[in-house]
Amino acid sequence: MIPETTESISFLGVTIKAGAYGNINYYAYYFLTKMVFFSSFAIWFVTCRHWWRFALLVPLAMLVFQIVGIVNTSIDYIDEFDFWYSLPIVIPVLVLLIFISKKMNFYVQSLDLLDEINQEIKKES
Image 1 (cartoon, rainbow, N blue to C red):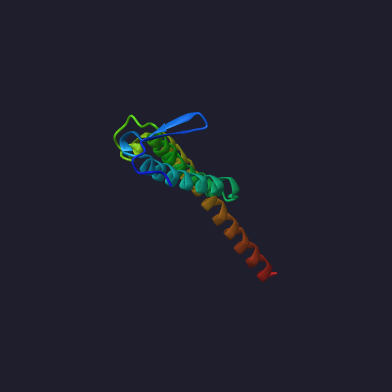
Image 2: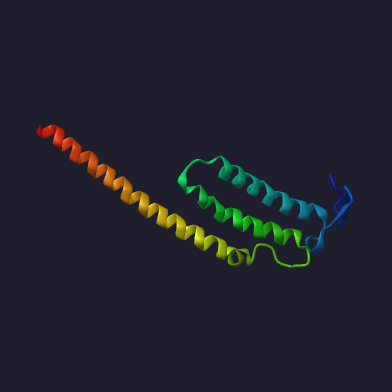
C-alpha cells in the first residue's frame, strides 16, 4: 500500500518517520504487530474474572516498553533491553501472585479438610 522508498508519512498533521527501520512498511509492521498483541492482552485483562488476571500485567508491561522503543526512532535496537526495563513492574506482580496463590492453596486445603470432617461426622451419626 505504501511505496517501499517512503521514509516518512504525514497523517492528520503528524509526521511519522521510519528512523532506523529504513522505510515506513517495516515501521508499520513492527508497530502494528506490537499493538495487536497489546490490545489482545489488554482486552483479556479487562474481561478476565479470575484472580490470576494480574499475571497478564507482565506481558502488558513488556509490550508497553517495546512499543515505546518502536515509537522512539532515535534508538538503534528493537526488543533488546525491554525485559530489564520492565523488571520493576514484573517482580512485584509476580511476588503478589505467589503470595495470593499460597493463601488460596491454604484456604482450599482447609475447606477440603472441613468437608472431610463433616462427612466423617455424618457417617458416624
